[in-house]
Image (cartoon, rainbow, N blue to C red; front, side, top):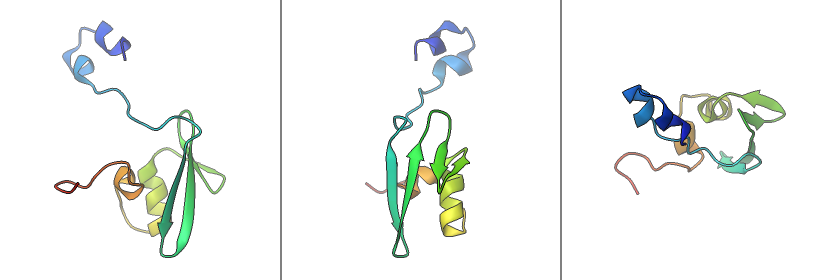
Length: 82
């Protein structure tokens, strides 16, 4: 986090630190009666033995539709809901 303040570029100074789960964390979500497990890795996510760059791409693989991955896995509330 301290590295973001070294830069003099205002956009970089305002950037929020990554709030991603710790590597090794397992995210479990039930979808249509099937339990899906995703493992957080250092730079990506693993689902069914395959790497994915984002949780949204994993959610799309599971559901077949576009989702916000953070919302799908319960890491972020939907707007206006708590």
